[in-house]
Length: 218
Image (cartoon, rainbow, N blue to C red; front, side, top):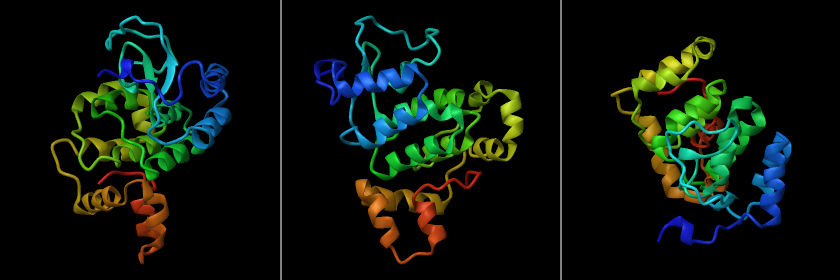
């Protein structure tokens, strides 16, 4: 059954979606964050932001600011998730967006599609901390040299240590420490944010398990 046949958790006609769409249109970042963090029922909810019944070409040039293509669950309807919306706001390089993305992942949100990462870079390049948190949610994500093309040169130079560490992972496995982090997070699942602080570990290691950005990738 395709996702078109399933009723979204928050359909287009719902009051929540009307408020969310209004906030997105108004670029009201605070309201977007509040709606996602306090009013969406669960972190893997499906939110319907559009239903225009026309097939969207993933390679098409789409209107700016519209969450389509690889951000969404399918192309025929704009069915998206809280993490997709939060990540797409990451271009603002705002701490609140970073914390929203981090909180969603620590409460068990599914990661973005791996094939969406070029779009993550294109949208969030000026906010490398958002990219770092999303990237570290995967045990291993294949880094492509072609990703360099979607990062503006001035942004790459402004955050050179981070992007050098990202592309240094091309063709290389992640470090054992990261793989251990992913194993623990997988074991804890949606309880990461509650269980990690209970571990008899130094605060620095607890922060590492909870995807606190370090500024570089290993």
